[in-house]
Image (cartoon, rainbow, N blue to C red):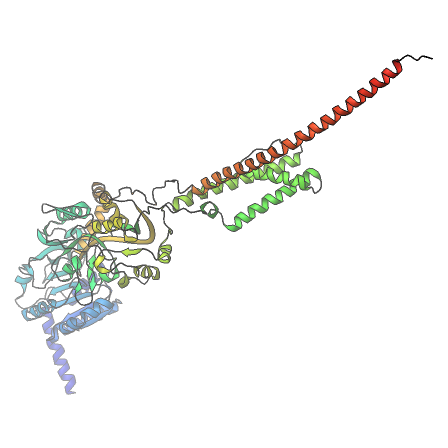
Length: 639
Protein backbone atom coordinates (compact mmCIF):
# COMPACT_ATOMS: atom_id res chain seq x y z
CA UNK A 1 0.00 0.00 0.00
CA UNK A 2 2.83 2.38 0.88
CA UNK A 3 4.52 1.51 -2.45
CA UNK A 4 1.36 2.43 -4.37
CA UNK A 5 1.15 5.81 -2.64
CA UNK A 6 4.80 6.61 -3.45
CA UNK A 7 4.30 5.57 -7.05
CA UNK A 8 1.18 7.74 -7.40
CA UNK A 9 3.02 10.76 -6.01
CA UNK A 10 5.93 10.15 -8.43
CA UNK A 11 3.58 9.97 -11.39
CA UNK A 12 1.85 13.17 -10.26
CA UNK A 13 5.17 15.01 -10.11
CA UNK A 14 6.12 13.60 -13.53
CA UNK A 15 2.89 14.82 -15.10
CA UNK A 16 3.40 18.28 -13.69
CA UNK A 17 7.02 18.29 -14.81
CA UNK A 18 6.48 16.92 -18.26
CA UNK A 19 4.04 19.68 -19.01
CA UNK A 20 6.76 22.30 -18.59
CA UNK A 21 9.29 20.06 -20.35
CA UNK A 22 7.19 19.82 -23.44
CA UNK A 23 5.40 23.07 -23.26
CA UNK A 24 5.72 23.72 -26.99
CA UNK A 25 6.66 20.25 -28.32
CA UNK A 26 4.63 17.38 -26.95
CA UNK A 27 5.82 13.82 -26.40
CA UNK A 28 3.83 12.70 -29.42
CA UNK A 29 5.62 15.28 -31.56
CA UNK A 30 9.02 14.01 -30.42
CA UNK A 31 7.91 10.54 -31.43
CA UNK A 32 6.90 11.78 -34.89
CA UNK A 33 10.19 13.62 -35.28
CA UNK A 34 12.29 10.57 -34.41
CA UNK A 35 10.18 8.33 -36.62
CA UNK A 36 10.52 10.72 -39.59
CA UNK A 37 14.30 10.89 -39.22
CA UNK A 38 14.45 7.10 -38.89
CA UNK A 39 12.54 6.63 -42.15
CA UNK A 40 14.47 9.33 -44.01
CA UNK A 41 17.87 7.74 -43.34
CA UNK A 42 16.55 4.14 -43.49
CA UNK A 43 18.28 3.31 -40.23
CA UNK A 44 18.14 -0.22 -38.89
CA UNK A 45 17.21 0.70 -35.31
CA UNK A 46 16.86 3.55 -32.83
CA UNK A 47 19.19 3.71 -29.81
CA UNK A 48 18.40 6.20 -27.04
CA UNK A 49 21.51 7.39 -25.23
CA UNK A 50 20.99 9.12 -21.90
CA UNK A 51 23.15 10.41 -19.10
CA UNK A 52 24.50 8.10 -16.44
CA UNK A 53 22.96 10.55 -13.96
CA UNK A 54 19.57 10.45 -15.61
CA UNK A 55 16.58 11.95 -13.86
CA UNK A 56 13.06 10.64 -13.67
CA UNK A 57 11.63 13.09 -16.20
CA UNK A 58 14.05 12.24 -18.98
CA UNK A 59 13.85 8.52 -18.22
CA UNK A 60 10.07 8.56 -18.40
CA UNK A 61 10.18 10.47 -21.68
CA UNK A 62 12.63 7.96 -23.16
CA UNK A 63 10.49 5.00 -22.15
CA UNK A 64 7.38 6.66 -23.50
CA UNK A 65 9.06 7.30 -26.86
CA UNK A 66 10.43 3.75 -26.90
CA UNK A 67 6.98 2.30 -26.39
CA UNK A 68 5.51 4.35 -29.23
CA UNK A 69 8.32 3.42 -31.62
CA UNK A 70 8.02 -0.25 -30.70
CA UNK A 71 4.39 -0.13 -31.71
CA UNK A 72 5.62 0.95 -35.14
CA UNK A 73 7.86 -2.15 -35.22
CA UNK A 74 11.04 -0.15 -34.84
CA UNK A 75 13.89 -1.87 -33.01
CA UNK A 76 14.69 0.06 -29.83
CA UNK A 77 17.60 0.07 -27.39
CA UNK A 78 18.28 2.28 -24.37
CA UNK A 79 21.86 2.78 -23.17
CA UNK A 80 23.86 5.28 -21.13
CA UNK A 81 26.85 7.37 -22.15
CA UNK A 82 29.23 4.96 -20.43
CA UNK A 83 27.69 2.02 -22.33
CA UNK A 84 28.15 3.94 -25.57
CA UNK A 85 31.83 4.42 -24.79
CA UNK A 86 32.49 0.76 -24.02
CA UNK A 87 30.35 -0.88 -26.70
CA UNK A 88 30.76 1.55 -29.59
CA UNK A 89 33.15 -0.71 -31.50
CA UNK A 90 30.79 -3.67 -31.10
CA UNK A 91 27.91 -1.61 -32.44
CA UNK A 92 30.02 -0.60 -35.41
CA UNK A 93 30.77 -4.24 -36.26
CA UNK A 94 27.31 -5.69 -35.69
CA UNK A 95 24.73 -2.96 -36.40
CA UNK A 96 24.07 -1.47 -39.80
CA UNK A 97 23.48 2.30 -39.67
CA UNK A 98 21.77 2.85 -36.30
CA UNK A 99 20.10 6.10 -35.25
CA UNK A 100 21.48 7.41 -31.96
CA UNK A 101 19.05 9.78 -30.23
CA UNK A 102 20.60 12.15 -27.66
CA UNK A 103 18.25 14.14 -25.41
CA UNK A 104 19.99 17.13 -23.79
CA UNK A 105 18.34 19.33 -21.20
CA UNK A 106 21.12 20.64 -18.95
CA UNK A 107 24.65 21.92 -19.41
CA UNK A 108 26.01 19.00 -17.37
CA UNK A 109 24.38 16.51 -19.75
CA UNK A 110 25.77 18.35 -22.77
CA UNK A 111 29.35 18.32 -21.44
CA UNK A 112 29.00 14.68 -20.49
CA UNK A 113 28.05 13.84 -24.08
CA UNK A 114 30.85 16.05 -25.42
CA UNK A 115 33.37 14.17 -23.29
CA UNK A 116 32.13 10.83 -24.60
CA UNK A 117 32.43 11.90 -28.27
CA UNK A 118 36.15 12.54 -27.81
CA UNK A 119 36.77 8.85 -27.21
CA UNK A 120 34.64 7.21 -29.92
CA UNK A 121 36.06 6.76 -33.40
CA UNK A 122 34.88 7.04 -36.08
CA UNK A 123 32.09 9.33 -35.10
CA UNK A 124 30.57 9.25 -38.61
CA UNK A 125 29.55 5.58 -38.28
CA UNK A 126 25.91 6.15 -37.10
CA UNK A 127 23.24 8.78 -37.68
CA UNK A 128 22.97 11.21 -34.76
CA UNK A 129 19.84 13.07 -33.71
CA UNK A 130 20.57 15.56 -30.92
CA UNK A 131 17.48 17.14 -29.36
CA UNK A 132 17.79 20.09 -27.00
CA UNK A 133 14.78 19.59 -24.77
CA UNK A 134 12.60 22.40 -23.51
CA UNK A 135 13.80 23.41 -20.07
CA UNK A 136 13.28 26.26 -17.70
CA UNK A 137 15.07 29.21 -19.26
CA UNK A 138 16.50 27.08 -22.09
CA UNK A 139 20.08 27.29 -20.75
CA UNK A 140 21.62 25.64 -23.85
CA UNK A 141 20.07 27.95 -26.44
CA UNK A 142 23.29 29.83 -27.07
CA UNK A 143 25.20 26.58 -27.73
CA UNK A 144 22.66 25.11 -30.13
CA UNK A 145 22.00 28.35 -32.02
CA UNK A 146 25.65 29.44 -32.37
CA UNK A 147 28.01 26.43 -32.06
CA UNK A 148 31.33 28.31 -32.06
CA UNK A 149 33.72 25.45 -31.36
CA UNK A 150 33.53 21.77 -32.23
CA UNK A 151 31.98 20.79 -28.94
CA UNK A 152 30.71 17.37 -30.12
CA UNK A 153 33.93 16.47 -31.99
CA UNK A 154 32.22 15.95 -35.34
CA UNK A 155 34.11 15.70 -38.63
CA UNK A 156 33.30 16.32 -42.26
CA UNK A 157 31.54 12.96 -42.69
CA UNK A 158 29.45 13.09 -39.52
CA UNK A 159 25.70 13.00 -40.08
CA UNK A 160 24.38 14.76 -37.00
CA UNK A 161 20.99 16.46 -37.01
CA UNK A 162 20.29 18.99 -34.27
CA UNK A 163 16.89 20.28 -33.15
CA UNK A 164 17.31 23.43 -31.10
CA UNK A 165 14.31 23.64 -28.76
CA UNK A 166 11.18 24.72 -30.64
CA UNK A 167 13.00 25.90 -33.76
CA UNK A 168 11.32 24.08 -36.69
CA UNK A 169 14.58 23.50 -38.59
CA UNK A 170 16.79 20.43 -38.49
CA UNK A 171 20.40 21.59 -38.77
CA UNK A 172 23.39 19.47 -39.80
CA UNK A 173 26.51 19.88 -37.69
CA UNK A 174 29.90 18.98 -39.12
CA UNK A 175 33.46 20.26 -39.03
CA UNK A 176 36.55 20.28 -41.20
CA UNK A 177 39.80 20.32 -39.23
CA UNK A 178 39.77 23.88 -38.02
CA UNK A 179 37.86 22.98 -34.82
CA UNK A 180 34.93 25.05 -35.98
CA UNK A 181 31.43 23.61 -36.18
CA UNK A 182 29.78 24.31 -39.50
CA UNK A 183 26.03 24.13 -39.95
CA UNK A 184 23.67 23.45 -42.80
CA UNK A 185 19.88 23.81 -42.66
CA UNK A 186 18.83 20.44 -44.04
CA UNK A 187 15.07 20.40 -43.53
CA UNK A 188 12.10 21.96 -41.80
CA UNK A 189 9.91 19.84 -39.59
CA UNK A 190 6.43 20.24 -38.25
CA UNK A 191 4.05 17.72 -36.67
CA UNK A 192 1.52 18.23 -39.45
CA UNK A 193 3.72 18.21 -42.55
CA UNK A 194 6.60 16.11 -41.27
CA UNK A 195 10.11 16.36 -42.71
CA UNK A 196 10.49 18.72 -45.68
CA UNK A 197 13.95 18.85 -47.26
CA UNK A 198 15.37 22.23 -48.16
CA UNK A 199 17.81 20.77 -50.69
CA UNK A 200 17.98 17.78 -53.02
CA UNK A 201 21.78 17.55 -52.96
CA UNK A 202 23.34 14.51 -51.33
CA UNK A 203 25.74 14.64 -48.41
CA UNK A 204 28.89 14.75 -50.57
CA UNK A 205 27.60 17.55 -52.75
CA UNK A 206 26.55 19.60 -49.72
CA UNK A 207 29.95 19.36 -48.04
CA UNK A 208 32.37 19.45 -50.96
CA UNK A 209 33.86 22.75 -49.83
CA UNK A 210 36.77 22.10 -47.46
CA UNK A 211 37.38 25.85 -47.00
CA UNK A 212 41.06 25.67 -47.92
CA UNK A 213 41.94 22.96 -45.40
CA UNK A 214 45.54 21.73 -45.74
CA UNK A 215 45.96 18.13 -46.93
CA UNK A 216 49.36 16.50 -46.38
CA UNK A 217 50.38 14.46 -49.43
CA UNK A 218 52.91 11.61 -49.44
CA UNK A 219 54.57 10.99 -52.82
CA UNK A 220 56.66 7.97 -53.81
CA UNK A 221 59.96 8.99 -55.35
CA UNK A 222 60.44 7.88 -58.99
CA UNK A 223 57.03 6.23 -59.04
CA UNK A 224 55.09 5.89 -62.30
CA UNK A 225 52.15 8.13 -63.21
CA UNK A 226 53.17 10.89 -60.78
CA UNK A 227 56.16 13.21 -60.75
CA UNK A 228 57.39 16.36 -59.05
CA UNK A 229 58.62 19.31 -61.09
CA UNK A 230 59.67 22.43 -59.20
CA UNK A 231 57.43 21.54 -56.28
CA UNK A 232 54.41 20.89 -58.55
CA UNK A 233 52.92 17.47 -59.16
CA UNK A 234 52.54 16.13 -62.67
CA UNK A 235 51.53 12.86 -64.27
CA UNK A 236 48.13 11.19 -64.16
CA UNK A 237 47.78 10.94 -60.37
CA UNK A 238 49.36 14.34 -59.79
CA UNK A 239 46.98 16.04 -62.23
CA UNK A 240 44.06 14.15 -60.71
CA UNK A 241 44.88 15.41 -57.21
CA UNK A 242 45.10 18.97 -58.51
CA UNK A 243 41.61 18.62 -60.04
CA UNK A 244 40.30 17.27 -56.73
CA UNK A 245 41.81 20.21 -54.86
CA UNK A 246 39.95 22.60 -57.16
CA UNK A 247 36.50 21.04 -56.78
CA UNK A 248 36.89 20.34 -53.04
CA UNK A 249 38.75 23.57 -52.20
CA UNK A 250 41.65 22.17 -50.20
CA UNK A 251 45.32 23.12 -50.12
CA UNK A 252 47.98 20.60 -51.13
CA UNK A 253 51.03 20.29 -48.91
CA UNK A 254 53.61 17.98 -50.51
CA UNK A 255 55.77 16.15 -48.01
CA UNK A 256 59.31 14.96 -48.69
CA UNK A 257 59.12 12.05 -51.18
CA UNK A 258 59.63 8.56 -49.78
CA UNK A 259 61.58 5.78 -51.49
CA UNK A 260 58.92 3.07 -51.63
CA UNK A 261 55.21 2.33 -51.68
CA UNK A 262 55.41 0.46 -48.40
CA UNK A 263 55.62 -3.10 -47.11
CA UNK A 264 54.88 -4.77 -43.80
CA UNK A 265 57.61 -5.74 -41.37
CA UNK A 266 56.61 -7.54 -38.14
CA UNK A 267 59.23 -5.65 -36.10
CA UNK A 268 59.05 -2.17 -37.64
CA UNK A 269 55.52 -2.06 -39.04
CA UNK A 270 54.71 -0.37 -42.33
CA UNK A 271 57.38 1.39 -44.35
CA UNK A 272 57.28 3.91 -47.20
CA UNK A 273 54.20 5.93 -48.06
CA UNK A 274 51.88 3.44 -46.32
CA UNK A 275 53.88 3.97 -43.12
CA UNK A 276 53.40 7.75 -43.42
CA UNK A 277 49.63 7.27 -43.50
CA UNK A 278 49.55 4.74 -40.67
CA UNK A 279 51.68 6.99 -38.44
CA UNK A 280 49.44 10.01 -39.17
CA UNK A 281 52.28 11.86 -40.88
CA UNK A 282 50.28 12.20 -44.10
CA UNK A 283 46.60 12.42 -45.04
CA UNK A 284 46.74 11.03 -48.56
CA UNK A 285 49.18 8.99 -50.65
CA UNK A 286 49.52 9.79 -54.35
CA UNK A 287 50.88 6.98 -56.55
CA UNK A 288 49.68 3.81 -58.27
CA UNK A 289 49.08 1.89 -55.02
CA UNK A 290 48.05 -1.75 -55.37
CA UNK A 291 44.95 -2.80 -53.43
CA UNK A 292 45.68 -5.75 -51.14
CA UNK A 293 43.78 -7.16 -48.18
CA UNK A 294 46.79 -6.61 -45.95
CA UNK A 295 46.90 -2.91 -46.76
CA UNK A 296 43.14 -2.50 -46.44
CA UNK A 297 43.42 -3.42 -42.78
CA UNK A 298 45.51 -0.31 -42.06
CA UNK A 299 44.71 2.29 -44.75
CA UNK A 300 41.77 3.30 -46.91
CA UNK A 301 41.69 3.21 -50.70
CA UNK A 302 39.66 5.21 -53.17
CA UNK A 303 37.78 3.49 -55.96
CA UNK A 304 40.14 1.71 -58.41
CA UNK A 305 41.40 4.14 -61.05
CA UNK A 306 43.67 1.90 -63.14
CA UNK A 307 43.15 -1.77 -63.96
CA UNK A 308 46.15 -3.53 -65.45
CA UNK A 309 47.73 -6.97 -65.85
CA UNK A 310 50.66 -8.49 -64.04
CA UNK A 311 53.37 -9.83 -66.36
CA UNK A 312 56.76 -11.47 -66.15
CA UNK A 313 59.25 -9.48 -68.23
CA UNK A 314 62.45 -11.13 -69.46
CA UNK A 315 65.38 -10.17 -71.64
CA UNK A 316 64.79 -11.55 -75.14
CA UNK A 317 67.19 -14.50 -75.59
CA UNK A 318 70.10 -13.88 -77.96
CA UNK A 319 70.19 -17.53 -79.08
CA UNK A 320 66.95 -18.19 -80.93
CA UNK A 321 64.90 -21.02 -79.59
CA UNK A 322 63.50 -23.09 -82.47
CA UNK A 323 60.30 -25.03 -81.96
CA UNK A 324 60.79 -27.98 -84.28
CA UNK A 325 57.31 -29.38 -83.79
CA UNK A 326 55.29 -26.14 -84.02
CA UNK A 327 53.69 -27.17 -87.30
CA UNK A 328 52.58 -30.49 -85.88
CA UNK A 329 51.28 -29.05 -82.59
CA UNK A 330 48.56 -27.17 -84.45
CA UNK A 331 46.52 -30.39 -84.57
CA UNK A 332 46.43 -33.00 -81.88
CA UNK A 333 47.65 -36.54 -82.48
CA UNK A 334 44.06 -37.70 -82.84
CA UNK A 335 43.37 -35.18 -85.61
CA UNK A 336 46.52 -36.17 -87.50
CA UNK A 337 45.60 -39.85 -87.18
CA UNK A 338 42.09 -39.18 -88.44
CA UNK A 339 43.44 -37.25 -91.43
CA UNK A 340 45.74 -40.14 -92.41
CA UNK A 341 42.85 -42.61 -92.10
CA UNK A 342 40.69 -40.41 -94.36
CA UNK A 343 43.41 -40.37 -97.05
CA UNK A 344 43.84 -44.16 -96.93
CA UNK A 345 40.10 -44.89 -96.96
CA UNK A 346 39.53 -42.39 -99.79
CA UNK A 347 42.25 -44.10 -101.87
CA UNK A 348 40.64 -47.52 -101.38
CA UNK A 349 37.13 -46.23 -102.20
CA UNK A 350 38.37 -44.54 -105.39
CA UNK A 351 40.00 -47.81 -106.44
CA UNK A 352 36.81 -49.78 -105.84
CA UNK A 353 34.73 -47.25 -107.77
CA UNK A 354 37.14 -47.16 -110.71
CA UNK A 355 38.20 -50.80 -111.05
CA UNK A 356 35.24 -52.58 -109.45
CA UNK A 357 37.82 -54.55 -107.54
CA UNK A 358 41.11 -54.45 -105.69
CA UNK A 359 44.34 -53.48 -107.45
CA UNK A 360 47.55 -52.36 -105.75
CA UNK A 361 48.69 -50.39 -108.78
CA UNK A 362 45.46 -48.39 -108.91
CA UNK A 363 45.47 -47.91 -105.10
CA UNK A 364 48.97 -46.41 -105.16
CA UNK A 365 47.96 -44.17 -108.05
CA UNK A 366 44.84 -42.92 -106.22
CA UNK A 367 46.83 -42.52 -102.98
CA UNK A 368 49.18 -40.10 -104.74
CA UNK A 369 46.21 -38.23 -106.25
CA UNK A 370 44.51 -37.83 -102.83
CA UNK A 371 47.76 -36.61 -101.24
CA UNK A 372 48.08 -34.15 -104.10
CA UNK A 373 44.60 -32.79 -103.42
CA UNK A 374 45.41 -32.21 -99.73
CA UNK A 375 48.65 -30.53 -100.81
CA UNK A 376 46.64 -28.24 -103.13
CA UNK A 377 47.76 -30.00 -106.33
CA UNK A 378 45.49 -30.57 -109.33
CA UNK A 379 44.57 -33.87 -111.02
CA UNK A 380 46.33 -34.90 -114.27
CA UNK A 381 42.90 -35.50 -115.78
CA UNK A 382 39.38 -35.16 -114.45
CA UNK A 383 37.45 -38.48 -114.41
CA UNK A 384 34.53 -39.09 -116.77
CA UNK A 385 32.35 -41.14 -114.41
CA UNK A 386 29.91 -39.14 -112.28
CA UNK A 387 30.65 -41.27 -109.22
CA UNK A 388 34.38 -40.53 -109.51
CA UNK A 389 33.70 -36.83 -110.01
CA UNK A 390 31.51 -36.71 -106.90
CA UNK A 391 34.17 -38.52 -104.86
CA UNK A 392 36.95 -36.17 -105.97
CA UNK A 393 34.72 -33.13 -105.34
CA UNK A 394 34.07 -34.32 -101.76
CA UNK A 395 37.80 -34.79 -101.21
CA UNK A 396 38.47 -31.28 -102.56
CA UNK A 397 35.83 -29.77 -100.24
CA UNK A 398 37.22 -31.54 -97.17
CA UNK A 399 40.77 -30.45 -98.08
CA UNK A 400 39.69 -26.79 -98.29
CA UNK A 401 38.08 -26.96 -94.84
CA UNK A 402 41.00 -28.81 -93.23
CA UNK A 403 43.65 -26.56 -94.78
CA UNK A 404 41.77 -23.39 -93.78
CA UNK A 405 41.50 -24.63 -90.22
CA UNK A 406 45.14 -25.64 -90.17
CA UNK A 407 46.50 -22.32 -91.41
CA UNK A 408 44.22 -20.30 -89.12
CA UNK A 409 45.34 -22.34 -86.12
CA UNK A 410 48.96 -22.14 -87.24
CA UNK A 411 48.89 -18.34 -87.37
CA UNK A 412 47.30 -18.17 -83.92
CA UNK A 413 49.79 -20.64 -82.53
CA UNK A 414 52.73 -18.72 -83.93
CA UNK A 415 51.31 -15.45 -82.61
CA UNK A 416 51.01 -16.88 -79.11
CA UNK A 417 54.54 -18.23 -79.18
CA UNK A 418 56.46 -15.28 -80.52
CA UNK A 419 58.57 -15.00 -77.38
CA UNK A 420 61.67 -17.09 -77.93
CA UNK A 421 61.52 -18.85 -74.58
CA UNK A 422 61.34 -22.48 -73.55
CA UNK A 423 58.01 -21.62 -71.84
CA UNK A 424 55.04 -19.38 -72.57
CA UNK A 425 53.01 -19.60 -69.34
CA UNK A 426 53.55 -18.96 -65.66
CA UNK A 427 53.36 -22.69 -65.04
CA UNK A 428 56.15 -23.22 -67.56
CA UNK A 429 58.26 -20.56 -65.86
CA UNK A 430 57.89 -22.29 -62.49
CA UNK A 431 58.71 -25.71 -63.97
CA UNK A 432 61.73 -24.35 -65.86
CA UNK A 433 63.38 -23.02 -62.69
CA UNK A 434 66.34 -21.36 -64.45
CA UNK A 435 65.17 -17.73 -64.04
CA UNK A 436 65.45 -15.69 -60.85
CA UNK A 437 62.52 -13.46 -59.88
CA UNK A 438 62.79 -9.70 -59.36
CA UNK A 439 60.22 -7.58 -57.50
CA UNK A 440 60.38 -4.02 -56.22
CA UNK A 441 61.53 -3.71 -52.63
CA UNK A 442 58.85 -2.58 -50.15
CA UNK A 443 56.05 -3.00 -52.67
CA UNK A 444 52.86 -5.05 -52.92
CA UNK A 445 54.74 -7.63 -55.03
CA UNK A 446 57.34 -7.90 -52.27
CA UNK A 447 54.54 -8.89 -49.85
CA UNK A 448 53.06 -11.64 -52.05
CA UNK A 449 53.25 -14.32 -49.32
CA UNK A 450 51.28 -12.06 -46.96
CA UNK A 451 48.16 -11.56 -49.06
CA UNK A 452 47.82 -14.56 -51.39
CA UNK A 453 47.33 -18.28 -51.02
CA UNK A 454 47.72 -18.99 -54.73
CA UNK A 455 50.11 -21.99 -54.84
CA UNK A 456 51.43 -20.99 -58.27
CA UNK A 457 52.33 -17.46 -57.14
CA UNK A 458 53.92 -18.79 -53.97
CA UNK A 459 55.93 -21.27 -56.03
CA UNK A 460 57.00 -18.43 -58.32
CA UNK A 461 58.01 -16.35 -55.29
CA UNK A 462 60.36 -19.11 -54.13
CA UNK A 463 62.64 -18.28 -57.07
CA UNK A 464 63.00 -14.66 -55.86
CA UNK A 465 66.47 -13.11 -56.00
CA UNK A 466 68.28 -12.26 -52.76
CA UNK A 467 66.87 -9.18 -51.04
CA UNK A 468 70.01 -7.08 -51.41
CA UNK A 469 69.84 -7.52 -55.18
CA UNK A 470 66.17 -6.47 -55.50
CA UNK A 471 65.59 -3.09 -57.19
CA UNK A 472 64.25 -0.04 -55.35
CA UNK A 473 62.55 1.44 -58.43
CA UNK A 474 61.38 0.48 -61.90
CA UNK A 475 64.35 1.89 -63.80
CA UNK A 476 66.74 -0.13 -61.67
CA UNK A 477 64.64 -3.26 -62.14
CA UNK A 478 64.57 -3.07 -65.95
CA UNK A 479 68.27 -2.22 -65.99
CA UNK A 480 69.01 -5.46 -64.15
CA UNK A 481 66.86 -7.35 -66.67
CA UNK A 482 68.91 -5.96 -69.54
CA UNK A 483 72.18 -6.86 -67.81
CA UNK A 484 71.31 -10.48 -67.03
CA UNK A 485 69.56 -13.09 -69.14
CA UNK A 486 68.43 -15.24 -66.21
CA UNK A 487 66.13 -12.70 -64.52
CA UNK A 488 62.37 -12.20 -64.69
CA UNK A 489 60.79 -8.94 -63.47
CA UNK A 490 57.28 -9.29 -62.00
CA UNK A 491 55.44 -6.01 -62.54
CA UNK A 492 52.40 -4.56 -64.29
CA UNK A 493 51.79 -3.61 -67.90
CA UNK A 494 51.19 0.04 -66.97
CA UNK A 495 54.49 0.28 -65.11
CA UNK A 496 56.39 -1.28 -68.01
CA UNK A 497 54.76 1.00 -70.58
CA UNK A 498 55.62 4.00 -68.42
CA UNK A 499 59.30 2.97 -68.53
CA UNK A 500 59.41 1.86 -72.19
CA UNK A 501 61.43 4.84 -73.46
CA UNK A 502 64.12 4.20 -70.83
CA UNK A 503 64.60 0.47 -71.45
CA UNK A 504 67.82 -0.27 -73.35
CA UNK A 505 67.12 -3.84 -74.50
CA UNK A 506 64.46 -5.94 -76.18
CA UNK A 507 62.06 -7.60 -73.75
CA UNK A 508 59.59 -10.42 -73.99
CA UNK A 509 56.90 -11.25 -71.47
CA UNK A 510 54.43 -13.89 -70.42
CA UNK A 511 50.99 -13.14 -69.03
CA UNK A 512 50.40 -14.33 -65.49
CA UNK A 513 46.61 -14.00 -65.53
CA UNK A 514 46.70 -11.75 -62.43
CA UNK A 515 44.98 -8.35 -62.37
CA UNK A 516 46.19 -5.30 -60.47
CA UNK A 517 43.93 -2.45 -59.32
CA UNK A 518 45.61 0.87 -58.57
CA UNK A 519 44.11 3.63 -56.43
CA UNK A 520 44.88 6.56 -54.13
CA UNK A 521 45.43 5.80 -50.44
CA UNK A 522 44.20 7.66 -47.34
CA UNK A 523 44.47 7.28 -43.59
CA UNK A 524 42.37 4.51 -42.09
CA UNK A 525 38.94 5.87 -41.26
CA UNK A 526 39.59 9.12 -43.10
CA UNK A 527 36.42 11.25 -43.30
CA UNK A 528 37.47 12.40 -46.77
CA UNK A 529 37.38 8.95 -48.42
CA UNK A 530 33.70 9.11 -49.29
CA UNK A 531 33.94 12.67 -50.63
CA UNK A 532 36.96 11.89 -52.82
CA UNK A 533 35.23 8.77 -54.17
CA UNK A 534 32.15 10.86 -54.96
CA UNK A 535 34.15 13.32 -57.05
CA UNK A 536 36.20 10.55 -58.70
CA UNK A 537 32.97 8.93 -59.89
CA UNK A 538 31.85 12.28 -61.24
CA UNK A 539 35.20 12.62 -63.03
CA UNK A 540 34.63 9.22 -64.62
CA UNK A 541 31.16 10.18 -65.80
CA UNK A 542 32.03 13.61 -67.21
CA UNK A 543 35.24 12.49 -68.93
CA UNK A 544 37.86 14.12 -66.69
CA UNK A 545 39.57 10.78 -66.02
CA UNK A 546 39.82 10.00 -69.74
CA UNK A 547 41.12 13.48 -70.45
CA UNK A 548 43.88 13.13 -67.87
CA UNK A 549 44.79 9.66 -69.17
CA UNK A 550 45.07 10.99 -72.72
CA UNK A 551 47.12 13.92 -71.46
CA UNK A 552 49.48 11.54 -69.63
CA UNK A 553 49.63 8.45 -71.91
CA UNK A 554 51.22 5.34 -70.51
CA UNK A 555 50.42 2.82 -73.24
CA UNK A 556 53.55 2.90 -75.37
CA UNK A 557 53.91 -0.01 -77.85
CA UNK A 558 56.32 -2.64 -76.67
CA UNK A 559 58.99 -3.99 -78.99
CA UNK A 560 59.59 -7.70 -79.08
CA UNK A 561 56.62 -8.59 -76.96
CA UNK A 562 53.97 -11.19 -77.39
CA UNK A 563 51.49 -8.48 -78.30
CA UNK A 564 53.37 -7.55 -81.53
CA UNK A 565 53.11 -10.53 -83.86
CA UNK A 566 56.12 -10.82 -86.19
CA UNK A 567 57.32 -14.08 -87.75
CA UNK A 568 61.10 -14.21 -88.11
CA UNK A 569 63.56 -16.75 -89.50
CA UNK A 570 63.42 -18.99 -86.42
CA UNK A 571 59.65 -19.39 -86.76
CA UNK A 572 59.95 -20.87 -90.27
CA UNK A 573 63.13 -22.84 -89.58
CA UNK A 574 61.29 -26.21 -89.50
CA UNK A 575 59.67 -25.54 -92.90
CA UNK A 576 62.92 -24.31 -94.43
CA UNK A 577 64.69 -27.37 -93.03
CA UNK A 578 62.13 -29.66 -94.70
CA UNK A 579 62.45 -27.82 -98.02
CA UNK A 580 66.25 -27.80 -97.97
CA UNK A 581 66.33 -31.41 -96.81
CA UNK A 582 64.00 -32.41 -99.65
CA UNK A 583 66.21 -30.61 -102.17
CA UNK A 584 69.34 -32.32 -100.82
CA UNK A 585 67.63 -35.72 -100.88
CA UNK A 586 66.40 -35.15 -104.44
CA UNK A 587 69.88 -34.14 -105.54
CA UNK A 588 71.34 -37.23 -103.90
CA UNK A 589 68.83 -39.51 -105.66
CA UNK A 590 69.55 -37.76 -108.97
CA UNK A 591 73.29 -38.33 -108.57
CA UNK A 592 72.73 -42.02 -107.84
CA UNK A 593 70.57 -42.36 -110.96
CA UNK A 594 73.18 -40.61 -113.09
CA UNK A 595 75.94 -42.87 -111.83
CA UNK A 596 73.80 -45.93 -112.34
CA UNK A 597 72.93 -45.03 -115.93
CA UNK A 598 76.52 -44.04 -116.67
CA UNK A 599 77.64 -47.59 -115.84
CA UNK A 600 74.72 -49.18 -117.63
CA UNK A 601 75.14 -47.28 -120.95
CA UNK A 602 78.70 -48.54 -121.91
CA UNK A 603 77.72 -52.18 -121.39
CA UNK A 604 74.72 -51.78 -123.64
CA UNK A 605 76.89 -50.15 -126.30
CA UNK A 606 79.42 -53.03 -126.20
CA UNK A 607 76.68 -55.58 -126.54
CA UNK A 608 75.29 -53.67 -129.44
CA UNK A 609 78.71 -53.56 -131.17
CA UNK A 610 79.25 -57.27 -130.69
CA UNK A 611 75.83 -57.99 -132.02
CA UNK A 612 76.42 -55.74 -134.98
CA UNK A 613 79.86 -57.26 -135.64
CA UNK A 614 78.48 -60.78 -135.50
CA UNK A 615 75.67 -59.79 -137.82
CA UNK A 616 78.09 -58.23 -140.29
CA UNK A 617 80.34 -61.28 -140.13
CA UNK A 618 77.45 -63.60 -140.87
CA UNK A 619 76.34 -61.38 -143.73
CA UNK A 620 79.81 -61.44 -145.23
CA UNK A 621 79.99 -65.20 -144.90
CA UNK A 622 76.63 -65.51 -146.59
CA UNK A 623 77.68 -63.20 -149.41
CA UNK A 624 80.88 -65.13 -149.94
CA UNK A 625 78.98 -68.35 -150.10
CA UNK A 626 76.54 -66.90 -152.60
CA UNK A 627 79.43 -65.58 -154.74
CA UNK A 628 81.09 -68.96 -154.77
CA UNK A 629 77.85 -70.61 -155.82
CA UNK A 630 77.33 -68.03 -158.55
CA UNK A 631 80.86 -68.55 -159.85
CA UNK A 632 80.27 -72.26 -159.85
CA UNK A 633 77.12 -72.00 -161.89
CA UNK A 634 78.62 -69.49 -164.29
CA UNK A 635 81.66 -71.60 -164.96
CA UNK A 636 81.51 -73.44 -168.41
CA UNK A 637 81.64 -77.18 -168.52
CA UNK A 638 84.07 -78.87 -170.99
CA UNK A 639 83.41 -82.35 -171.88
